Length: 119
Image 1 (cartoon, rainbow, N blue to C red):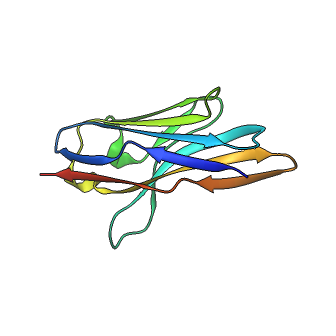
Image 2 (spheres, rainbow, N blue to C red; image 1 turned 60 degrees about the vertical axis):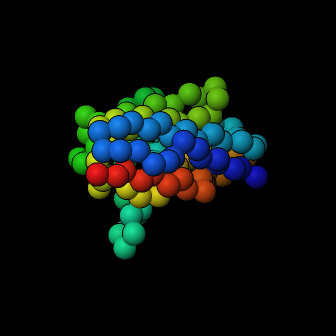
Image 3 (cartoon, helix red, strand yellow; image 1 turned 30 degrees about the vertical axis):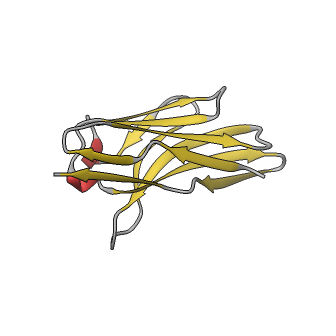
């Protein structure tokens, strides 16, 4: 069984910073893609940033230049550093990992962490 545990959300004023972390545990052979998604009230879940095993990254246009995604393969952890936060960044943030276990590849999700940016 694979579990993802996210942490680091909270309340911050516009222009501030937050750091989200997500760690995977369980019977894992390797992890391909790691990513962060977010879902604001009344909106669909959207990709914020992703990083593949080789280190290449992909960002939503709305966060480019402000957010940085990184990963620590040894610790099975993905980090999202969020700077210059805006009220429109307010959402529940979910981590996602494409995990290789014995015999299969599956997507796993963390429990979600609330990020609230006040104006």
